[in-house]
Image 1 (cartoon, chains in turn red, cyan):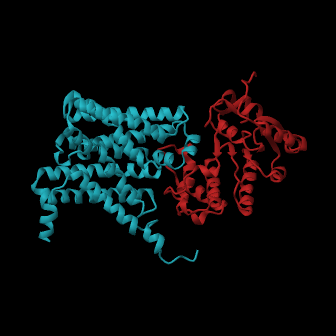
Image 2 (tube, rainbow over the protein chains, first blue to last red):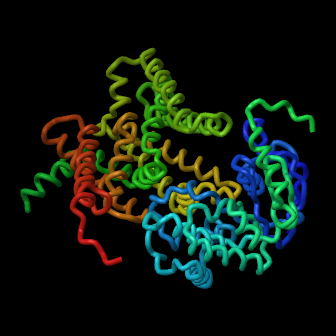
Image 3 (cartoon, chains in turn brown, blue):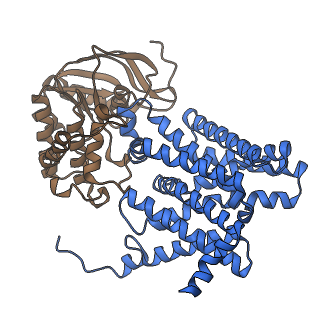
Length: 240
Length: 291
């Protein structure tokens, strides 16, 4: 179930945000995707999900796999008249599609997922009644029922209190234990060091991709920071 | 009781044009309601207005080719609406401009082209008829068209309910799990166009949107669920149509504006006194709960 990046370049309007990334995302790995703002972390996740077409290079799947993608919170309109429970049930789309029914076992599983993120008592409230932290919990419950092989989380703990972060981090670690492949964009480096065995440091170019301790060295972080300072608008045409 | 019957029911029983107009409005109310609610929720309330203008050049071509022939004008309007919707979609996907900017550009061109085309053959009376409709001139052919469109819309909505709703709520999620997610948006635009075309005969291209949007935005103040909003919107549209027809019957004013203003009054009332998010709820809330 591993993903192989073959000189992947992805970005917007000719400007690469991810520049010639090569490497393999191992099956059942738990990777912290770190790097400066504008370093291509979200772009990489969008490219893997298929929401963004690569400018060049490609992503190869060793076999057909299901991808679960959690974008940054701001992208959903929470005033939409949708209940918490229905939001979680949407996670069954890959198995039910547009017409398939949702059976009793699945309904039970959805409630169980809500229970695991501590949101079962909110099941029948509209999503407009939730705070952003509570909504993030609900989206995690949806990812649980979605049962994807590869989970891509874009800043899952941004703007979320410490208790919610701790709860949701447990969910992530459990996914890892159950054989899922997880990539999470993180800005909390101590958190990444503590819980994520692998790390990918991205500053448009891939600075390092290895065991977390080997990636998060003073040198590498400084290198990424220096690169980020040099970004400007007038790139030459890339020869590679 | 019999006074009420004479005042409210009798006009529809006595006059064929009144009962046909009422039936037409009921059909339009039923199919426009879910579309209006979705447009509102997607923050595309003005998009219906733009699409209503966009059908005009097609209607004009139909008018030039066949005079005031309903099938030709409807076919033309439908074609023009779909072409504009697809062009807007393509321009949005492949250029820097957002959907609203492209839509504004295309509908302005379409509206001008439509007015120009009509002036080539018709006169101002024809133009007024096309822009503002004549609900009392609804004939059997128009009723069949409205019935067909209404049935088609409600069937499509029932069949693709999950997709239409999911695409409106969380398009990024749907695109991540479903390859054809964009098709739901296209289907939605097509439904909006066919409904506008069906209602232009009754209300005119300019006011066709009124029966779609006003009941929908009024319904927002009464319920928090999508299905409830659709039912509320349809009920409000039916009430407004009936009231508008009666008002125009008794005090002899144009019917289209009377219907739209009736719907507008219900919107103002809902905004003032509605259950959720209204002025009343904001300034005179019910007692709060303990958690």
